[in-house]
Length: 192
Image 1: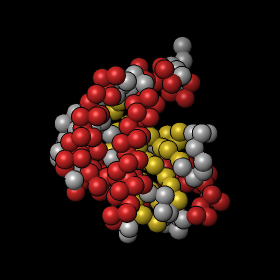
Image 2: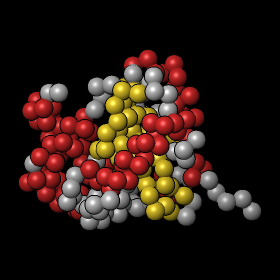
Image 3: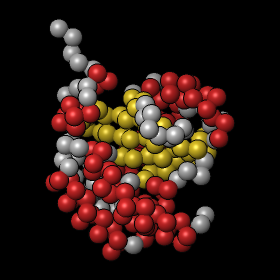
Image 4: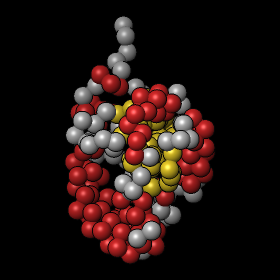
């Protein structure tokens, strides 16, 4: 009998297999990012690449997080011509391309560390955006520099993880107002 593929599973089935799990900050997360960054950069066409950053809660020292390393890869605007090549290059290093029709191109999402048996020991989300589409980077930097706000975010995440343990979309959507608010502040503050 053939084992089911992750691509054949419904969101509800995936959410049961991959619940929202929060854990204490792991000082090794930045090292995992650096190791994965090197793999990514060694595998993609350097002509496409603009910038790569560790984002998300695993990039904020002391913040609880899902044990998933979020990476933002910014690419040049004309990369759509090489989109298939980029997908194949990332699939070569075990990323799964998650087509998201509700997101306007080039907002691409890749995942690594998801198996039919649940999470692997290392899990990554690679967010691919055009150069300048980097709100996540601003929000992350704001949390790093404002521990009181990072603590508020921690409390929000704990409440939402309990409520939406098996609904990743609802968990993410419920954080949107908080994230958007502080991202706007951060973009005005940093403007780099």
